[in-house]
Length: 82
Image (cartoon, rainbow, N blue to C red):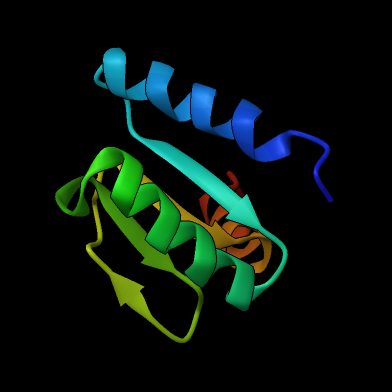
């Protein structure tokens, strides 16, 4: 939409990398996750960026993981204390 959300997200990822912290970038759609995966690999390097959409998982444990909000939500529910 051109509102600058990607710029803010990209800065947060840069800060995470600078602080040796892993980061997650979420998108609402698989197609958008795939697009951002390609974009972020160009910015941060192929070895630093992973993808998790539910259908596919590439480079698990990468410094930056691009994922759908559905996958993130499911991870959060599984990690929730009983």
